[in-house]
Image (tube, rainbow, N blue to C red; front, side, top):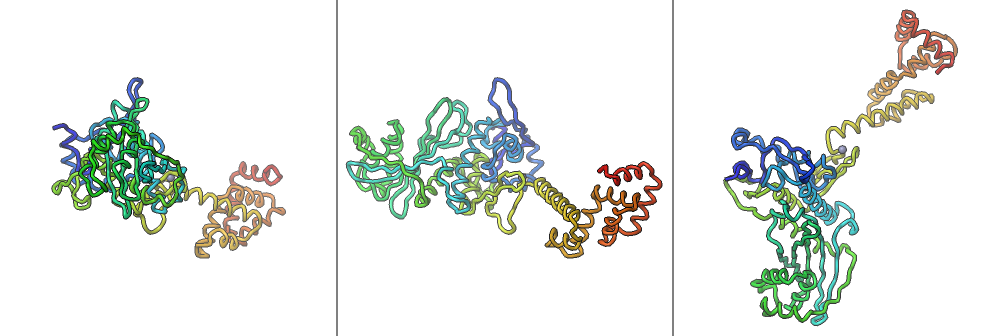
Length: 456
Ligand SMILES: [Zn+2]
């Protein structure tokens, strides 16, 4: 038994102490994990379960920088469940595919406007000239890593792979295949949508057009045989393959996506989810009720499962301070506005500084403390608002300079000093003690005099 199997949790996690980004000249950049030993895992039992709760596919989907990926990795551990070293290319692929599906689902949920151009999905309609049957095809392609070492491809089922959905009227078939392009595995997801029952010739026409590899077509057809309920007439794989050679004529049109495509796009999301749920099994002993007693081969699989469970609520929010996305899936109550405590504090500080500057500007322009309090702190009680105005003014260097100048010169500048006293910003006792201070510190007094004489 490999060490990875000994420490793997039912959620497919390999508990680790941290992750770092490693890049050498001759090897692809990777995220390297410090996995716990079985002994360490045993001694931490129960501790892990709590930290698990917060990570979702949505959090993975909003990652933009390598540093963010490494931070996520530090919490999640390996995504693919097989090694303590995972290629950054595989991570980028996992992030990109998650991003595409989370964005699409947000649009389908109405959590975000439907912008077809933002999706990497093409729609075509086709008509089989021999039978007049019409069908639509939705196509999406994804890079899932390098052909010789993709850990991502390794967690997927053997491709090509077919999934059938029965619609109220008609049928949707999702068909996944992969091909290698410039050293990368390109996963293509096709969703073929037929409005009514279809004949063997229609199948042959559809598959011959969209999968140019005969072996792939044959495999797909084998996948369909035995599902007699879906097929309107008797046919065999050999029969359909025979039809393929007659090159059925297809009239194809590219069409823009619109909201009437929602039910089919939803099927495409289902199909991509299913693709990630290979190796999921029931394990009543090591899993929990919260996870439906299911056990997962890798954590990426678990993330997709979590996404599937809350599909209707998928929603991403964006931090008002730094713009980073975060999951709002299933989030209720007060709207979350910031990605982290750090951003919340930053935003709060920026807001206080803005308020402070506004208070000072208004006071310099001659507004009364009461007026400023009302304008700048409308949500606060009169007393609290007044306190905040006074404290903003007290820490103000310009105010101190003006006051010192008034004390040493005794001229017109005293008007400002009296205003401060009248408004209750300072007291007569404050002025007296400042006067004493200036007397005791001739250098400060001299500077005040210079300031008063116009050297401001
Ligand atoms: Zn932020």
